Length: 116
Image (cartoon, rainbow, N blue to C red; front, side):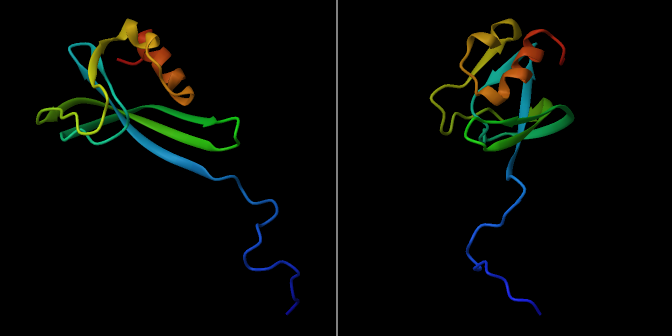
């Protein structure tokens, strides 16, 4: 067996970048889209088809892969458990809100009616 000069705690060279995986629902009600952070809302959602998969690399080098699933039906009342604000928005108004950079392609597609 050949010994290595690298200690067990030293970083590996050529290590693949880490990608954070995030799953979120796109809730639709009467044509409006629910806007809030990707956190628990206190509902029992019937998850539909995947409508978008976005991989984004930030300037810091961190990467995220976002998977969005359509939710047209759910049981229970939406609860604002930790957000500053939860609101239903008409599609056309979505670009006027402050979304994370990684969310912008989906926001654009929703606003333009490409995802229904």
